[in-house]
Image 1 (tube, rainbow, N blue to C red):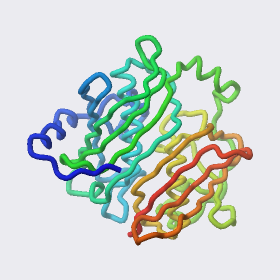
Image 2: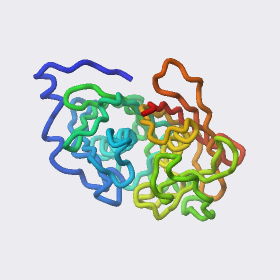
Image 3: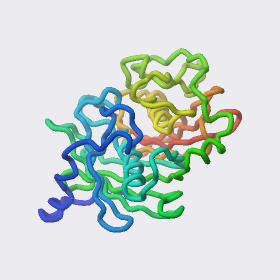
Image 4: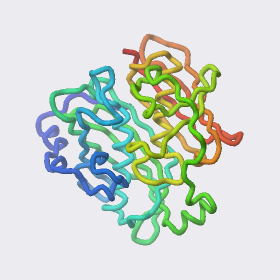
Length: 313
């Protein structure tokens, strides 16, 4: 992760860009059903494939809430990068609404001081450069985003996402009989919420297996944040949350701060069979953040992986 010192006043003013934080963008542009789940507040084109995206992190969120009473949940950065991909694709690259986005990876990293709570919501400026663009006529078929995250003129984090943009008709052909899938398996018993940094069973995405550091993926399609709108497979943000919860449980650090998460998606995680979540902590080093490798296995194959780093608090 790239971190820079405080910018000079002129540079800081340019990066603050107050006009990017006036109001939330229309929810359809970031594929959200609820206005309350929209983080993006503005988009500015710097050059052909260089953008600035305004984002506001609330002081309290119904799911991505305060960590240990001191920090914004860094998962907000992951969701901000996901939403930045969508608004840039729709508004700047003219990807029609209704297209599907197939992500192969999503990463983020943040400095703990950059996630500190203050008396106001955090205004976050994402400096986004798009690369590896594949075009389809006037629009695009694929793109990678490289993102720097600034707060008050200071670079506090970075990340990226890679995705394809697919017309709905093509997506339905790709998905075949699974294009209209909905969650249908019985939900397994949840692990104790306090073990994974939660207070309610409703927010737990790990089911108990009685096997050390192995769980089954658990989800409720009625969850207003994790399943904000209908989908035909388990969303990537649900997998990242499962990786977070598995890492906290594996290290016995329920109040730990997830300072980075590198996720890769090899296949869709389907609703019609169980998915096992396995956490493997890396050896401790110098007292800094601990690393945990998390794998998702379904139907005998590894369908996704996450490398998580946790700061114990």
